[in-house]
Amino acid sequence: MSKSKKKTEHSWTGPALELRNLSLRFDGHSALDNLTLTVDPGLSVAVVGPNGAGKSTLFNVLAGILSPGSGEVRIHGHLPAQHLCLAYVAQSSHVDWTFPVSVEEVVMMGRVGLLGLFRQPTRKDWDFVRESLSRVHLEDLGRRQISELSGGQKQRMFIARALAQEADPILLDEPLAGLDIPSQDQILNILDDLKRRGITVLFATHDLELASRFDRILLLNRRLIAFGDRDEVLTTNNLTEAYGGTMQVIETPEGRIMIGDSGGHHGHEPVGRHG
Amino acid sequence: MDMNPWGAMVDWLLEPLAFEFMQRGLLIAVVVGIICALVGCYIVLRGMAFLGDALAHAILPGLAVGYLVSAGDRGTLFWWALGTAVVTSVGIGALSRGVRIKQDTAIGIVFAGMFALGIALISTVRNYAVDLTHFLFGNVLGVTRADLWLTAGVGVAVLVIIFFFYKEFLVLSFDPTLVTTLRLPARTLEVLLSILMAVAIVVSLQTVGVALVVALLVTPAAAASLVTKNLRSMMFLASVIAAGSGVIGLYASYYLNVASGAAIVLTCTFFFILIWFGKSVMRKVKGLPVNN
Image 1 (cartoon, rainbow over the protein chains, first blue to last red):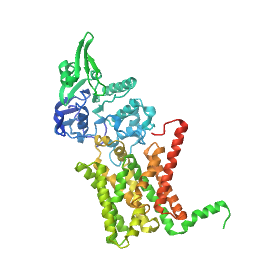
Image 2 (image 1 turned 120 degrees about the horizontal axis):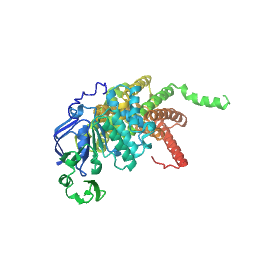
Image 3 (image 1 turned 60 degrees about the vertical axis):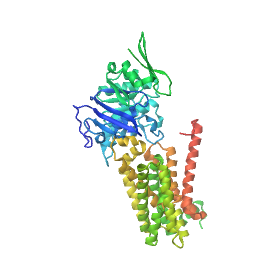
Image 4 (image 1 turned 90 degrees about the vertical axis):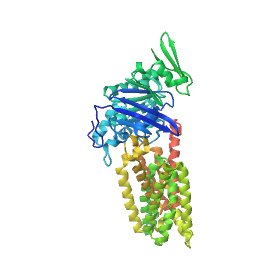
């Protein structure tokens, strides 16, 4: 654990994440409706649900970017605003990739909060940055300008930044979107590594098959439809409830196939298979 | 007269330096150029050029009031201008946060209103045309020793602030989301950066004036951004371009008898075009797309 004074002490025995009756409204519409759940430390949780289900909204509340309309959020027992230890890897389209920074400088940004005002990064901080980069297999690309990275490398850079931040939990919003299969596999391997290190991960995705690799699945459609392991969550009833008319469940000899309109922009596509 | 071409060149360079107003003008052009280039890097990276221009115009009423109460004393003018700039930059932020007005609309409202107020105030003075011209386009040859010391002091302060808040400003400029998750004091950093911008604008009044200051803020930083890969080298190159443009612009002004502020800004523009063109040619040679 970091010795920095700014880092609030954790109650590592308690839950990593606790939501109590969390609700949020935008312009009179309910974005999140009465969420209550507890995530134990070290678990990996897939957050799934149709478009507009509130996955990104939930992450923004946890990150402290949006304040909850009502209800409570606790991260390791503390309010979001008291915490340095949560990292949020948002969908990366908002970043200006021509910005004049190198990969290792972006990763060092993760340590800015830990360093505190008026303190410059020390040799130890740079060692930490290099170690974080090697955890995501980017150790050779640290000096590159960020626009020189591929899509998968960019996502891995942000995961390295979360590691440099010594973050727990780490929130990842659709980190595989738009990546080719090898890049997706690399990121999934990194997630396995995070799991071995006992880091709590929340992972928003459209992909139900992918979701079933995680310890827990949170099925969301503004309200919490189900939260538990895959056998509890990926049931016909729950999925129909979450996806409504856009979801069809077909029983086949190979198992149960769920067909859903997950993205609006894709039309109908298989979103997963379970059985 | 020395017929040796080097001697002629040296004479050519030294001749303006015989005048004290040229010495002071050159020094202040270099210092102001460096301040504007450093602050300008953040303005370029955060896409705030319009805000910078608006801020420059909005300080005119502050200058006018300072002018009316002090009978033209430079020191008083400086503090009035700085005060107005800080109030305006914080005001634009508050206006766009409080009510449902887009930031560029808020800027437009504040910018034009304040500028009109400034012109109205200055026009109550009899020989206002001359003074207004100095405010709008600068008067680098009227720099006093006290102006020079004040500007140098401000320059050191800006350097110190950028040094101490370098990593926070970097995060703020690159990824505002991270500012929130790292629990950095976002609002305070924003205000501090606005104050730096206000300071840069106010110290540039004498060299380029209200109307052209945005060029000094944006052009050297934009030129440097074309050929640098990290913020430190961008800041360094932008400073070199801005300071060099100050010197070259003043020599051009002396020998060609053109307005000094315009000459400085045109030199910056020339460097920008040169670098942009050079980069385009390099890209063509390497067969890469011109943009990005």
